[in-house]
Amino acid sequence: MKPIEMELEKSLENCESSKVLEAMNYSLLAGGKRLRPLLLFETCKAYGVDTNIANPFACALEMIHTYSLIHDDLPAMDNDVLRRGRNTCHVEFDEATAILAGDALNTEAFYVMSQAICRDDQKIKCIEILANCAGVNGMILGQALDIESENKQISWNELERLHRNKTGKLFAAAFMMASVLADDKVHLPFWQEIGEKLGLAFQIQDDILDITKTSEELGKSNSDVENHKSTSVTLLGIEEANKILAKHFDEVVGMIESLEINSTDLIQLLMSIRTRQM
Image (cartoon, rainbow, N blue to C red):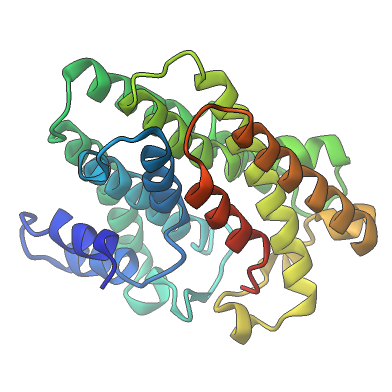
């Protein structure tokens, strides 16, 4: 079992038993790529920071990400029935329980961070970063833009803004929290741009996979088509989308390589993301 899986299992051990807790564990421990925790860990390693210090922040990132997926899958949003190869939370349980499970993971993330063993100034800054990146100036903004884009064609610039916020801001939070734990606040804006670029590239990649792979292969539904949303492929065509995807990945790698850190393993992780098939 990967260390992050063990940490996630432990993170909810002190919660009282309930149907909501069952739903939280069902979604949180369903597997997945764990990219946000991995980006945090590998960036910490690149800086020479003990990754054990980052465990609470890694769990918090995955809790926030999972809560967003639970809510994103709800009938009022994308109305998806498949996530990580099995029933979405509201299908497995019910809508009310899924809403509460998402709410609980959102709040529990900040409790977990409050228990981190690091300096108070680092802890407060990391909490600030995640709150900002996950909130109305970040992931929530992206989700709102996503809902507003249903049943209409939007421009490429509008889609880029959507992806930079909905996906890119949590990637940015992973990089930025590692930078804080390494006492490198100078490069926070730099890491934010890296995270947003990676988020955009990741979503372009998703758009391409959505038309080249089946739902069964991807382990999730393709609701963008059903909800008549613009994608990088519908706006640009698959050839141009692939070009922009490659451009942004190359820029992310180049930006990281320009820093005076030991980024070999981090770059290797990015390369595995670049070649993913699901």
